[in-house]
Length: 73
Image (cartoon, rainbow, N blue to C red; front, top):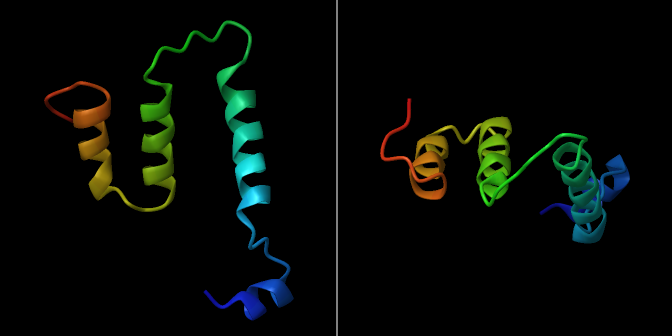
């Protein structure tokens, strides 16, 4: 990584701030009133991360392995 460039641009380069932000967002979205999540919440979050990061090749794999489906649409 080009830490000096990222610091000058004002980006967070430590994992603590990122992990804290992720935890906050996940809790806000998964603990809304009326939400009922099972063990599959991790798979849903992994799907969203793969989709948003452009790694769409991994989406089918996540559905198949983590969500227990033998096929993905």
